[in-house]
Every structure is written in structure tokens, then in C-alpha cells.
Image (cartoon, rainbow, N blue to C red; front, side, top):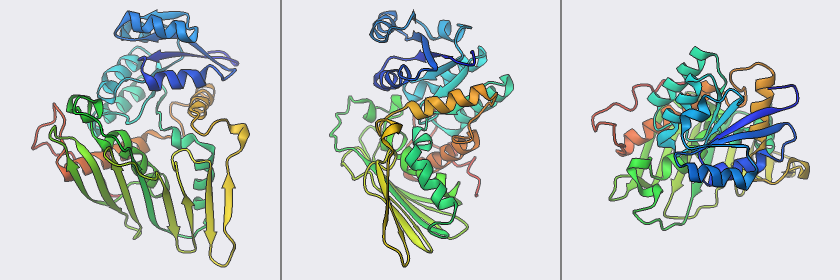
Length: 344
């Protein structure tokens, strides 16, 4: 890494890897130097598409490439523990897609590995790096709506997804919660921290994954959070934060909003809109820029996406799965998924 350029490796060649790489190469201080897949042909095709110099047909070769400053792990989340762990153990810094891992046990193992090797590690929770979301959090933290009383957020896709789809496949960590529900949960915890109590209900598929899940989160402060996710119904992807002195509404796309409205008691509504200079609302460049800022500063984690916060979200996701009875291969029916749940 130089003062001007951070060299990236891309691990996996799917849709999210392509979207991230496309945004990454538009950053003047980023250079994508290598890509890896379990298929050499897939890696070469991806490399040719984006003009990447080196293509590897196995993950280990990428992890051992000392010309790489940081690896973006974009595999299905069932492979995050293995892929990110391989890179960390080889001395690479890592940005790992969300959900961070399958469960909090795996997440804690990655965090411990990163800290043992003194490497940077961050979950790719791009919502936390989005300028509009950061502005909203700043308003809430500054008391613009008083004490937070409720948070509501939803994320649902209409589908229908056939049983063969990865979202229905337990072997790939399928279901609405880990793919989509991680966003509403992360949004609520961004504003309120880890909940002290969790109640949840879900509709499960024949394969044993959740088709839709609703959860009620509560905090010692008296605040409540209502979160919902679905792969059988397209929702508004809206969010609302209500406080003792006002409310903030995000009418759509809460995890990458182009606007939100602040309602304060006794005042006219105030609309906040995205700055066109920040790029497209679905841009992933903000999380990439945060990784590069942190690396240049010698930080091993980001204050925007701290590892303890990632672990807290994983504890909540585990607790919700425990409540609704979703287990993945390798997790026994009697395994206590809530053993790590610590009240805030």
C-alpha cells in the first residue's frame, strides 16, 4: 500500500463481487490487482471483464499474494468463515460481505483471528457508510427527535423463489433473515445498540428456512424495535424512527436512501436529500473508501462498522433464529444459539 493507492483482491465472482468491483475501479486511489474463484475459468472471465491482472483458480493463492493490501470476500455467507479466515491467517486485511457469518460463533472466531494477527477486518455493511444514513444517525445522536422510543424497518422481496434457489437452500444459509433481515436489525442497532430482549415469529418453508420473519426488539431504556423481512412479499423497504420530540421517516430504500423527512414537534417537516456528488444511491464506494481510510490510518477496524457492533448484530440474528426454530446444517437442534446474547 502506498499513500496514493490501495491494492485490492476480490474473492468470488458473483453478482455482488461484480457490483463492488465496478464501483471500486471508479475510485482513483483503488487498484484491483487479483481475483480468485474456485473455478479458474470463472476467475479469468471476471478478470477480463474488469481488466484485473491476475486470476487465481483457488482462494489460497489469492490469500498468499503479498501484493494485495485488502481482500473483499464476496462468497455466499456459509463460506465467509473459511474464506475470510484463510485471508486473515495469511496476513491479508479483509472486508467481508454481510451477513458477516452464519452465526455468532463463526463471527467471534474471525474477530479473534483478525486481532491475533493484527489485521483489519470489517463487515461490508454498506448502509453504515452511506452518507444519508450517517446524517440520520448524527441527527438522532444530537437529540433532534429527543429520546428514541421506537424503530421500524422492513425489507421484503416478492419472489416467488423456487426451492432450488439459494434463498430456499439451508446448505447456503437460505431464508429471509440472514439475507434481508440483517438490514432492519442492523438499522435498529445502529441507533439503539444491542437489544435486551427479543421476541420473534416466522413462516418456514418445507426446507426449514424462514420465508418471512417478524421480530420485536426491546431495550432497557423502554425503546422498542419492530423489524420484518420476507422472500414472499415485496415490502416498501421503509423505516421510521420515533422519539420523544419528533420522528424521522425514510419512505423507501432505508438502507440506501435518497431522502428522509424530519418531523419535529411545533415545526414544519424538513426534508433531507442526497448530495448528487455522493454518486448513485446504490453505490458501494463509500464502504470501500472507509476501508482505505482506515488502512492508511493504521486502524484494524472501522469506527463506522465496529467489530463489536457486528458481533452484536450476529447475536440478535442468532436469537431470532432460536425463537423461530431455524437451524442450518452443522447446528444441532438442541444447540443454544442464544448463549452469546448479552443484554445491552
